[in-house]
Image 1: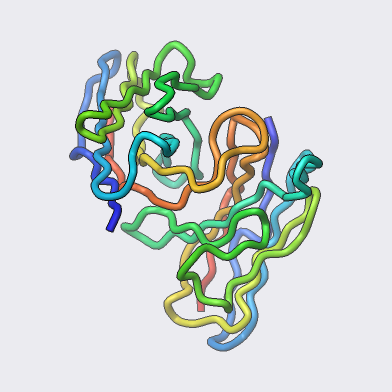
Image 2 (image 1 turned 120 degrees about the horizontal axis):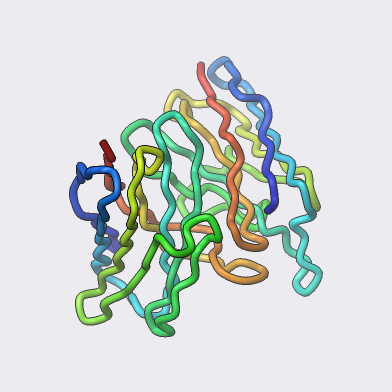
Length: 112
Length: 123
């Protein structure tokens, strides 16, 4: 199984400041056939289901604010919130969808 | 607007079975893949398996093989997940989710639409 390791477990960021969450996979998520990284990022708020933010490591889902961006390739990835807003307080998970079993990172709690 | 609406919370005894439904309203149904993901209290997300209704053949995570059954009813646009031989470790919030981008290899993908979740408590 591909192990996904997120860091940090939690971080506190001031409003308007930048937040960065790291995700490392135990195997490369880069698929040679299409040169895409099969990595997604989700936001989870209390009492709500996960919300897809980013897929293919850097493609923003429709409707997601452009302050959210994804980067990285191979085994190392980052989710960046360029200017933290109050509504961004949540848990964030990375997920590999390169091969089953699909696996998720342990989550990062973002607070103000 | 497309929605996934799941059945209500369940309380079950150890050793029994549970069946959770997920009804898709609006949009196409059969062409999409649907998966089940669970989250135990205070834990992370865990993929269980999924199905593409137009193909019908489900696929399961190795961990749940023999205990989980995922089916689809195209006539009602509903996905079902049945889990047997329940134990306390199966206490979790169970989500159905729709695939927007398929996996590079095998089953699953990235999920753009999620149900509201169904709490299953095993005592």
